[in-house]
Length: 174
Image 1: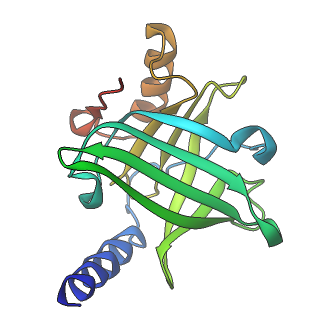
Image 2: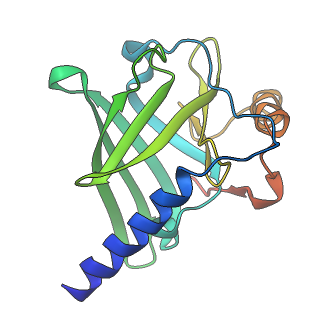
């Protein structure tokens, strides 16, 4: 019970930070349009700015998105840990007027966080996901690795939007 309360407190603090703006900085911009029917499915994490709940992950981080009733998107994350595997299930909803490029994601009841698709390969081979305050970033791919030119293109999108790529950690995929 105490562990759950501690996690809830951390989530609340984290999400409060997500709401802060970066005065004076160029704003993070999402892509113009995301076709959710093409976006759903399995994605492998190529790298990220790890969130606190990903610290136990040692390899094979991936996400699976599914279309749910009422326009919601099921979010199913999993990874290998040194003791086995861990998973987290949540739900996402598109922000009105964002053409599905800005989502709000929840893993813990009433707590929601920004999930903005800021880069997307025209063939949906990779997606770059961040948030407006640049604290979090994920590079996702339909395959366990990306060719160097695609990796460079995706990371250049992040760099141009002001993400500090010194925080970027590559994910081991077997």
